[in-house]
Image (tube, rainbow, N blue to C red; front, side, top):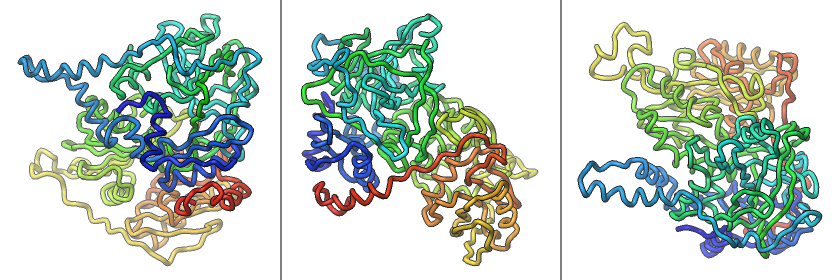
Length: 612
């Protein structure tokens, strides 16, 4: 079903018992984050805070905080149905028969729903602030985490137009509120907004910008989707396809841009490329670490339009799992058919929450020849935003890519360190704090598929062995409890499937390398294939926490190497003495005062104990 706006979606959630109203007064500074974080990590309901201190507007948060709610928002019973929907659209087959041609009519009708539909009057322009009336402080923008540089708009739909081609773009870029009518504009170097700004600068003109807050949930999702650069295909078009009807837009009041007619707020204004950039951040980001201060363009707000009695929708990002994990999963399902169209041996792929989108991609393939795992992984590195992937694990078609534990068992069973691992280099997300350079670093491919004779150095060939693959290799994982001590080791354990997890308090350069050398030579390493050295804040009993830390803290070329028969992963903090010159950011944690305050007021919020 199509939702005309976000409030209609909220009404349905409330009817289903998946939205809870909080009438007690709450602060937008950290308190809402702590409450919402607890609920999203427990699979709890969305929240509507009706009494936000120092604001006349309520805050809705967590609306897309479960897999089921995202599916509901996008009009499907399950997120897997998105792949079927797209596959059906791009497969305009059926031959030349009358029945075949008729079978394509409904597909073409779906495609015709792509262009947006302009309207003259819109709910989002019922109230207008201009000039000195503009005061972003009246909108309940959240201070999300203790070290954040200020309040951030976290669910903005940022609309720009290419100054040369006229092509429209909508993206979700965080915006730090700097003053009454200014914000930062977090356009990273690889983003479309940055290209639009560069073109405006070359033409000596300002870049008009409109920022919608709200709209229906299909549009909010579409702003996060990694759309390919296809002429005529933009986020409004994707939302129109998902909702099955053309998306209503209206011309802005002070900008020559189309904005969602059904949004709650729209901020209109411009970015002047001739201006000096401003310091933005820190910000507790989706990686679970703070991104440190950096220079970004400044957005000047010339007008704010809104509905009468608007709702301010927000999200929080941070240590996974978070709400954004379900939006990422929706994109996985939506773009799986396109990936299979380009790389047909792909059966499925998944980006687990511990990999915070780009740090880990697991892909299963239908393997028919040696080296195919590397062919697929390198192909994925060339697909759109998949270029940011840091580690790609390739498994056989019978492995369920969403089963995290099963995937890593396959890695120890079928991937011999060195023989079945390969490092390379390429673009890295600029939010990655551990890469060798800003936006540039190492990548790792792990071939955890069943091996062909050529891949294990056999004199035989796949052609000779028509019966199929070699017999499984004989590695037998074994966990030991008699583990050696080492300087700085705070905790360690081995798993039954061949992993050794270590939490290291690092105080000197080379300490992790020395540790790896010592442990690899110890008898306790006999049944182990992977040594994971994480920072001292890591819980070695928690598989997700270990991998989340490791994947964030490695540059694969620098920090993953073969030590003896082990693959060592150095996920400890990097030091200037080791040649790492950038600051190392802290992990996101909430201040104890807020944690204790929320715990003490839980009954006042009216929320059940199961979500505390």
